[in-house]
Image (cartoon, rainbow, N blue to C red; front, side, top):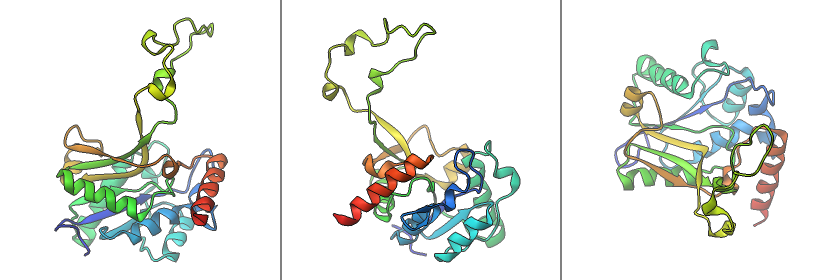
Length: 239
């Protein structure tokens, strides 16, 4: 095991075969390789991740992962592969497998969603280092919001904008508004014991944000997202 300061890390990449918006999304080619493999290769290149697991119900995803050197020791059960299956259930299933079938228990679990292909090994390692620096039980990645939520609101049925903006933000320049952040879905790290007891990665306490750039926070859900990611990858290769 590589370990980091005596702690072990299991990276789980959940990549089911189904996708309502974009069938076969996780094996669709992005800049020449299957989408899922961008996350697989980032995890494998981490200095601190001890083991990488791809949790999937798809034979195509299994083949893609194995092609870059990741063992896929089980196929995810049908009941954990639907639209309604939670990430927490998928993680717990993986942890149970390692404990019961291989006798392995890790200190921390890392969730790396395959829809965040621009997250790098360096990002993963920096998030783990932040976890250590903060003596945290959890770290979750965020990025700045593209537009301030203070400039947004719900609309009434008649589409009136009469009370759309709060008075305190009217006339304020966008650059003078406070910066808001959003969860970008790229990196979730959690103490295994706390995850097992609380069944969530988003703990109530001793949890910190790992800030990433908007460029690295592209979340692949549509063909437009694929196109944007291709542009950003091409740009990074020429810099």
